[in-house]
Image 1 (cartoon, rainbow, N blue to C red):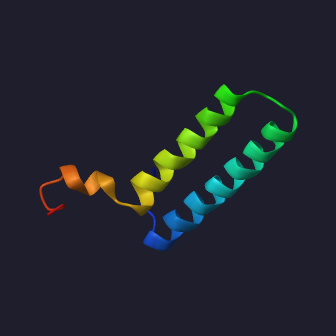
Image 2: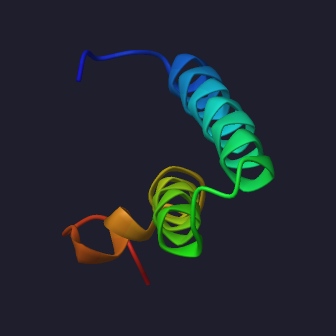
Length: 65
């Protein structure tokens, strides 16, 4: 991924999460299936945990507590 400012990444991830939410909504109203809905929800959770909760810093030398 290209080096971007912190705000740029936040905007991109926010837009991806919004798009996945819209996709999830249309999947739900068209009865696509619970397994695929769970897959999309899991992807959204991973994005939130990685980018907004900064879990990746726990395994770096300078991050974590």
